[in-house]
Amino acid sequence: MATIQNPILRGFHPDPSILRVEEDYYIATSTFEWFPGVQIYHSTDLVHWELIAHPLDRISQLNMLGEGDSCGVWAPCLSYDHGTYYLIYTDVKSFIGMFKDTHNYLVTASDIRGPWSEPVYLNSSGFDPSLFHDRDGRKYLVNMLMDYRDYQTSFGGIVLQEYSVKEKKLIGERFNIFRGTPTGVTEGPHLYYHDGYYYLMTAEGGTGYAHAVTLARSKNLRGPYEADPMGHVLTTRHLKGYPIQKAGHGSLMQAANGRWYIAHLCSRPIGEKKRCILGRETALTEVIWKDGWLKAADQTNRPMVTLEIPDVVGTQNSADLKEDFDGTAWSLHLQSLRVPLGERASLTERKGWLRLYGAECPNSKYRQSLLAHRQQSFHCNVTTKMEFNPRHFQHMAGLIYYYNTQCYYYLYISRDELLGRVLSIIYCDSCTGTMPIGAGITLPESGTVWLRLTAHGETAYFSYSLDGEIYHNIGPDLDATILSDDYFEETGHCMFTGAFVGICCQDLSGDGCYADFDYFDYQEFSE
Image 1: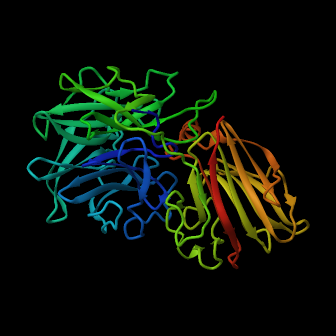
Image 2: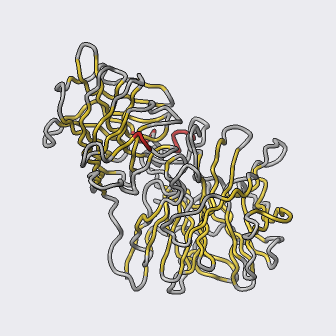
Image 3: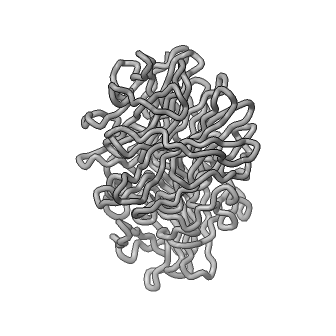
């Protein structure tokens, strides 16, 4: 028997959709503005998970050019029927203010690793779409209904409409089947059929500390749906000291061993300000059926911090990654922003190195030359070895600790008119940028430089080396907690991602520059 520690997918892995096909388990998670879109993990035992696919890997499926921070892919739903995998997703174009532009699409594949089809447009009435395959072979889409009118709640209920596989479109009348409970903010719907009832699982309370998983049921697909009289299936809204917080957005699955599990969103706050640097993560909680409703296996409505998986041995995966850029493609764990890097990156111009051609600044929502890895532990070292010969101050390249276009720390090489090639830091907090070390530290005019970020709980710091052995700290300690949803929420803004560490190159002059990176090394360590 293996004991696993939640979360099972650490770091920014929100809105899980879990699926079993015979002896194989899959989880799909949201990626927001990061490209390629949607992460799909595979396991054969619920303990060891491997990232196997990004199904939305081309512009014709997902073009997020110019989309705002935390737009893009929200809440994918993964399902399977008669040899075909179905993936439903929302591409959110905007969500600030009274309106939300939420376009919902469907792609399919015969092999979950791809290739996946061109998208079928479904609707734009709200986000968090999910596809239900009924026993008679008919298929139905459910999604939350977005209402912009100020005399109504903006979360207008869960709507259901039939989907025609033959016509590749929604058909028939749209029905509002569930208006939610008094908890409010009803979203994230998934439909299931079990023991004579249709069950509707939703997320409620918002995606923060009041988050919850709610269950309702009906004998009729179109309702009316009765909410569980005992309240939420899972929540931590009243458990302020619990190590796992923000539990919600659940997806139900029966394992091959007959047990039932909910994959759900969670976060782990850190420090006095209770900010979640690692973003919203994926946890797994065992549940049981009791009197026609679901409860956590320990008879509470709390998510499990640890759980035991029978007939399995071994421990959970490490997230460590050493990408040497020696192959024809880089690791699936590295992603770009909004669109593919395309001609802005090359693995062939210099064998064994990744060449990034300078593009737009770190505040751009269009074309950046940035490749990054999720921070998946509060304690990690991220190191890169690079060569870069900037011609003037508008040429920059280095290592970036990044939340979004508004908040990041950037250790970069550039050129100063008086000092020559320099190493400096840009600190960007809510779009306000400063340089804590002024013009920077003078470097040799050419040659290799190693850059490192060390994250240690609430703080982090940069260092550099000229020989790959001895590292020198540079700049002040950094407040890692500003790279979090919670930091933005404190100022009245909603964001939904997590901290990344990446390599990047900027050419703010447009006259052409590039940087070469020999490797990217992400290594976690104990506190």
